[in-house]
Image (tube, rainbow, N blue to C red; front, side, top):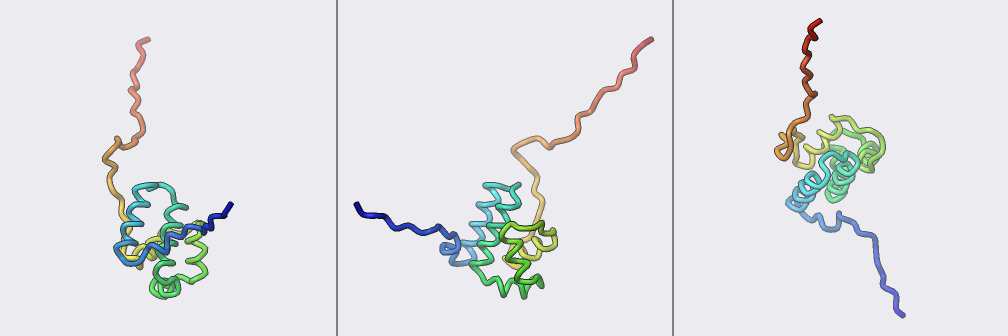
Length: 115
């Protein structure tokens, strides 16, 4: 019986140009918009597809800090994520949720009881 040789999937091998990177990030945001660790990992893939050393220079963030952040370690600040997104050609924004009602605290009717 022959063995099948496999290798670990690396998304970076398929991020060949800016369009690929943009589509990859957009798909990730649609897939898991609230998963910060997943988003950090996706931004890490995009950064590796580019050049982390160059991104560190452009963002002013130490290369080691970028590696740590993009591996999902630590708790990156909004400034770090924003600088990285900007260097990758994105900007952070808040978008209204259209598929559900906004969550608001329920109002309670306080009625006075007659004595």
